Amino acid sequence: MNPQKIKSVCFTGHRNFPLEQSGKLLLAVELLILQGYTEFYAGGAIGFDTCAAQAVLYLRQQYPQIKLHLLLPCDREEQTRGWSQMQLQLYDYIRSQADETVILGHYDRACMLRRNQALVDAASFCLCWFNQQRQRSGTGQTIRLAQKQRLQIQNLFVTK
Image (cartoon, rainbow, N blue to C red; front, side):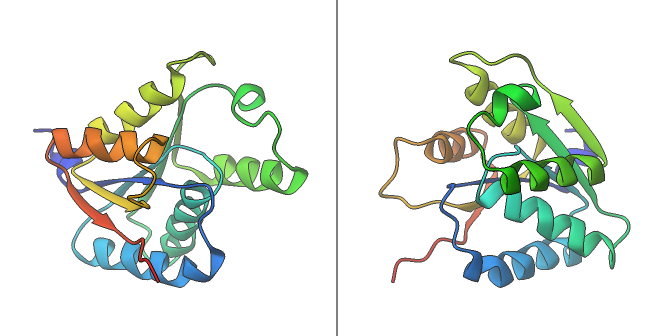
């Protein structure tokens, strides 16, 4: 196994990640850093992905050894079609601050699956925000891929 993969984390989660949970996400990422994880992979989606990337960028100020890698399904114009101006600005900021950005291909029916597979392939740990009631989602698909590859999974989603 690639030694870098041993201490790598991928993120996956739903678009409707509640911002009031950002502190919980930040703490989870920091605990992973304290366990020696240094490589963090995000897919550039709205919601949990964006918040997770921001958490890594924030914590990188205190832990300069950590790196943010973006594995994007397709180019900016295709991935962000229909996004608000604020979402576009945040996307551009995160891309400008990432240690690495990989665009995996062009937009087609399978581009999100390719991105999800690349995230799982890069990591040994999956930090997620997964509502188990939404099995038929990109997040559900990524969790199933992570389970199949025997990644350690931590789900921050809690039902009330």
